[in-house]
Image (cartoon, rainbow, N blue to C red):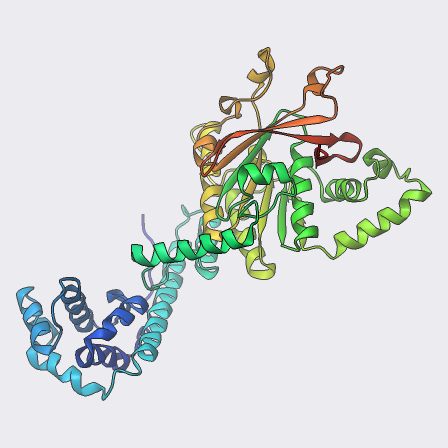
Length: 445
């Protein structure tokens, strides 16, 4: 396979004076290495000599040894690098590049910025080169470019390495804040008190699967949660609807927020008394940070790009995908099960990248219909593959009246939390007001 390559037209961005100033500051005041190490890493230095010297300094720090120009030179000599960096004189001369270590943070920022510019520049050249290879998919190229632009790619950033002491202190502070707040949950509220107590809310970076057989209310539950988050907490919600049109979703949102019969809204037979409630609902929804995209066919790569853009443009607190099995794979897999597995894994990675909870609706296979007890189990996930493995939470919806019209539980829905990576599993009951396609908490006893 032959690919076109091009020459870099200019010298890569760098600042050798800033690099020397950092190294000189460390020799003047070795204590600043703790600060420097949080801002830059070895590969951020453009000059390979400077990389070697900085690496030697870090090794000495890790070993608990002293740092001065003599010791650093000895460490370089021991590793066979002293002559490559210019000898002992080159190390000693670094002390003369700065009079004080006071500006080392500024110098680190300069070196860090140059390193990131070099990384962006290299990425651009790599994309140019790959774009000439006809075997590369356009989706893959665009995805890589947008991942870089929206921060998903590590562009010479300093390491996120952190000590356990720092983590312990941060978590204790977090727990103290939670204790003082007395909130019954820590994540984003679903709008259902019983579910929030069980799940602690929707947590950032998690993949949450809501699954059910047809007509159980998957979309209704997802919209109930979306409406609560956008209307009650004013947090931005992005819905990707692959099954229903945006018009159908708005009708459902009218019904559940205004509590007007959904069929009446669809047929235009809204009573005079309902118009005020409908107008109020319309005003609330118009001002809510709720965004709907109803692409009937969308690949995982396209969804990932649009989610990144949504977060960059309007912010993002919650994302909903309705539903998983209707997504189109970016690349064809060996089987449909493999494709679904790839997409569920990609959704989990996207949730982590964006730092938001994702709710993905999922179908169940028909085996559930063959059992006497038709309450779903994890094995009922359709084309499950790794859905169960990737999901942080799996909740099923079961309404007995769907199977038994004379059920004593008419108007009730069981929410069966069968997997909860960070907490308990269990069952909770909600009211389902079918005429409004709306779920509600049961009234308090």
